[in-house]
Amino acid sequence: MWAFLDGEFVQEKERLVQLENRGLTFADGLFEVIRTLEGRILFFEDHYSRMKKSAEFFNIEMRFPSEEARRIAVELVKRNGIEDGELYIELTRGTDPHRDHRYPPKETRSTFFMLALPLRKIDSTSWRDGVKLLTYPDLRHGLCEHKTINLLPNVLAKNFAYARGGYEALMFRESNGKKYATEGGSSNYFFVKDGVFYTPEVDNILSGITRGKVISLVEDLGYEVVEKRIALEEFFNAEEVFLASTVSRVMPVRAIDDVSFEVCGKHTAKVMRAYEDLFFSAR
Ligand code: PLP
Image (cartoon, helix red, strand yellow):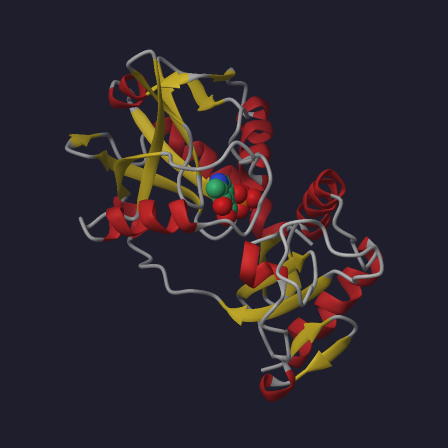
């Protein structure tokens, strides 16, 4: 399989990233996961501009302008013969032999790579029968609006869920003894109650590309969408729950811990249909 690394297309044996790369030693970097469908790259601009904004925030050099990055991505997907797959992009603050917390010298180049991978296997019955979520404390830092490669708490949360037959974690933070829902290890959440859609506001959670598209679609369908701080118990009292992410798209939730919900209720079904239409027609 080909990868793209710092300016060239490389095969496995040529993928040389130094062990002192700050992505490895400090998780000092950003990433994106983008869907490909029949060889097309979906919503590239949305993903790449999110990375660019975060790179500016963290002062990491963005080596390739968007148009060039897109051309590279198209070429990589083609070289690897990927039809339905995932494009992975990572940007780190580069390699500094000193392993020093302080930022490396100005002339240090950032490290940028792309992988084009076949789509991970998801049981197709998940979209019909719904998935289970397990609640888990949100142990992350205060920079969760950025898609950073600091993913250890997400890994812990998701594996807590997998070990109990779940598909994802529903993470929560506590404030004054009350638990508030945040997001999943790699998903955003919505619920429906009395014909209104609710989703946690973007306050130290990722503003998911799928989340944004779902909000627009739901509004186009004539619904009200409320973005606010949401107590975990509001999720438990919901009528319908679903998750949204690049890889899972819109997926119904059948249970959170031991509380069950109607799967693909009439409101969720409409959003799923609208998202699938957008997804299959996206360029
Ligand atoms: N929340 C987190 C923490 C994520 O890592 C992701 C995606 O990986 C999402 C939400 C969903 O975001 P998107 O729709 O951009 O894939």
